[in-house]
Image 1 (cartoon, rainbow, N blue to C red):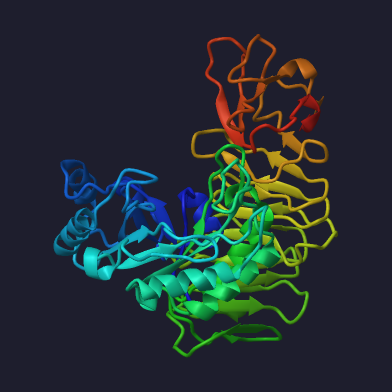
Image 2: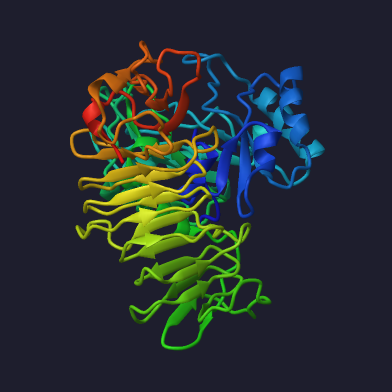
Length: 493
């Protein structure tokens, strides 16, 4: 099983919320801010050898314990037919320099298939013998408008091994995009896989490369209006499940419980000293599943590792301190996280359930995920990711505005969903339906009555206290771009 999971182009907050623990970063300041349990893969975009540009990018990160390695460049072209020609010697110089100056750091590239959809070919490209690079990403994307052929993955792996790339050096690249006008080598365009197709992609990879150093989702961001992981909540939920059930980057241990409830996990170890309030369901230092056997209120503490908590009573309390893994709460009832508890994901136990379950985050950053019912989802602050997941959902904004508190609503649908604004925060707005004169689509307010501004190009949502006056607008949310957002999408309470 893969120990690490990487999403190309994903912001750290979004990647971590969806269980990715190998983060796409470039700068030391961002690397140092990573939470425990995550590492950085530094994208360099360098293929000209050990130039001053290369040295300047790598040097600030030398010896940083949170750096897993360096992504030298994406799909270098050995021929010059498609992009600037890149020599194996240049890549070897870069990889060797990193290995000599930063022992233990890994080097990585993705490979361009120089063959065809039916006959992959990586000969005369790059391999460990001619570059010294540690890992090679293969990206045989099988879901297309002209064909869906999962055996393309099998052909690509066979061709890579024939070209001198051992299985241990192969990194699976999962297709998580479609559309956008990108043409394929079979004509037509790429199509975003369904979750069922994504599972088939993973099944092929698991058979061919069962224990990669990490796996890679390409890609998170959207270009040319394409569908991608970053704007598809169902695929994010799918990867959250994959990432949190295949990650073995921290130890897994046997949990213990007392009373009428059960806490379970795998492996064996002695629980660490108690560092949190006494709990009647206790985990260990490993990856635990804490699931009460009844619907009573419980206090649950997972201690270390990546823990999953199941809540069946709104009075239950989950205890997690910062730096103890990536932890998730799954609830069957409306639930609010307690202040200060370091939980990365708050979601419902049944995605397809239609019972209205209301979810409230705390002041830290979470990914909050509803079900198919009519949910009320409250961002408690910290720059949350909010996913309604179907139904007529209401997204509540009632915390102080600021640069660190911009929530991303991943699946806002103007035809059925609402954004609820607290008049104590959004001062000057009248309680009730937002007046049409108070809403504007554009980059900024165009008159004094415009207070809510939606930038349809970027998806940014702003509050401007004085319209076109001297006060600066403040972003408080990010929606998908090009939505038919109007004043009727908002309510003021």
